[in-house]
Length: 304
Ligand code: AMP
Image: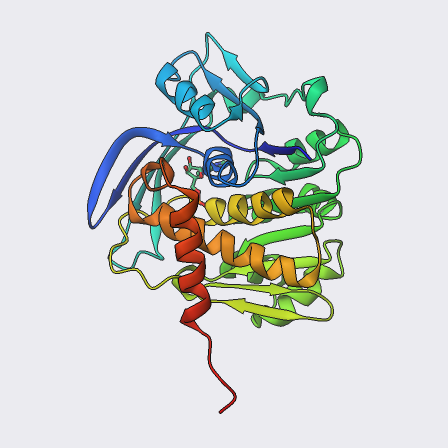
């Protein structure tokens, strides 16, 4: 089927109340690709790094069957760097710095072997770049896209143009409200649906995720973990698990979309247990299935 992922590849330094990491592997495209790699292979990665990007990270991506032919390496440039600090309430964080570096001049080249990709995940980057990737592809079966407050505020027109071509928009609560000026999340989702994507998923952090279409609403809880160390990338891991499952099954029925939401939540739950991508480094399919089943138990109840 072929899943293509575009987004940021980063070197992150993160502090949470439970510890910190310096210069760790991060970026939206990384979390998406690693999560999706548990369901479909190869995952085709389109992104850019600098000459300082450690070889060990490339070896790790290859070990997960992530195709790095579309990963540009700008020898004389520096990799995108991001620093973040989380509050005691892990839903709150401050960006300490954002160094775009090689992202400032990124021209997403899509290798010819990627053009037939049926599934596409547009990770959080400049919406103009997301759009360029779509223009360089054939006709995908499903386009899932993410964005963030920064683009909603600074490039609203470009973002609206890109959202028009998405089938699924994945946003968090504050992004949904900002995008629509509507405080009620279901109304906000329905408003977004009118602008292009037939499906909107609103991520609510530790309160799970809601999938909204014109006709249906599906709500999945987040896994009640006792140890959350680093929430970075949870939303991307969600998107990766979601689209990875759909690419694996090639089934876009309403019932399978619900399963995809729960697989997305499953990968997000592994992601937040450890720093950077450590929580998703060497999972087994059995572990993923076990947690998926626990999700089913979590909110199952009988009529009487
Ligand atoms: P999330 O927790 O889903 O917001 O994703 C966190 C990842 O996004 C981190 O690994 C960062 O490197 C990356 N990131 C932070 N700011 C940006 C940005 N402006 N553009 C693209 N990626 C970013």
